[in-house]
Length: 399
Image 1: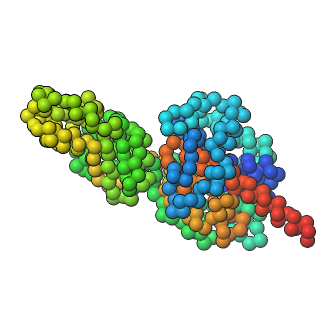
Image 2: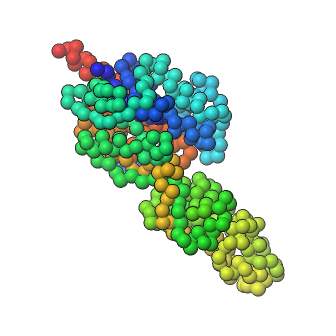
Image 3: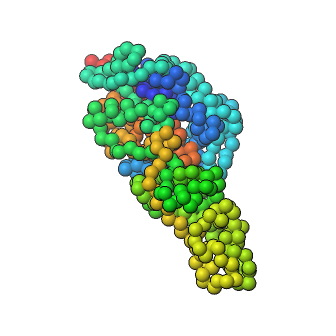
């Protein structure tokens, strides 16, 4: 018998276990990989984009939009930065408030594991969880035998990147206990476009350009990348979380505006595509299918020239699919947060069962937001576990 069993040794699970252990709770963390934090290790190109300077509810997608606010307010980016600084891990800030390790993402894993070990957490790796039952206490059935605990925390993540061991066990356990699960989908994922797009622009694979990508009325101004089958890059990954395939994404390839083209004289003899290539990649300008791009500027009116350039600002592209969970950075959807306490992460209908991190219906933007949700939700659950165990111990001692 133990106080807490955390299922999953990723970002949220490690944070929760360390927090619970620091407050004197007998805590076991079960991880089915041979080592914890495998997804942390590959994040941010191996440097771990561990948080963002500015984090708020608007940076997350959930069917319960305000659910994240309580946890984010109680464990902030500054709190995690302070932990990183305490361990002497050097870091730097990139664009849009994104914070990365100067060195390896392994430093973040080592820090979290050290936090767990120093808190007395029992880390058990290479253990596959098969099922969870509940009577007076929770029984966790695993490949390494049975474990009993007064509480269980689901921190097994979503379905993204199955080669790292992702599975849907959290959803299966949630449904078993009567919790609703919002349908899942790959999020922060490259897009597959239709055959017409591939025929016209597939040869541009590897070409990157700034843009504003818009999906479902939400816009992101970052780079995009052409692939053999469609689109990728930060702006596209961001937009992908807002698409319901089949759908379409709209691109503005002139994020700085088109005013620069106002200075092109009527007498300019260059082809429109050659003029455009001063502002977009030349290969893209050459491939652009609008027939006006093959005309000399001096052969068309100012209105026709303006209309030709405006096609670069409202390019609507049909999206027929995504590269799936194998390439998705996170999973959209998950265990419905309407059934969870936003303060404690505890299931309202299943006392003692907690849900944190990616397996909940909370999907962050690209840029450190999903890690911050892992830290904040893990911490919130860890503190709630302390309060719950302390309260139940007081009741038992009174009896």
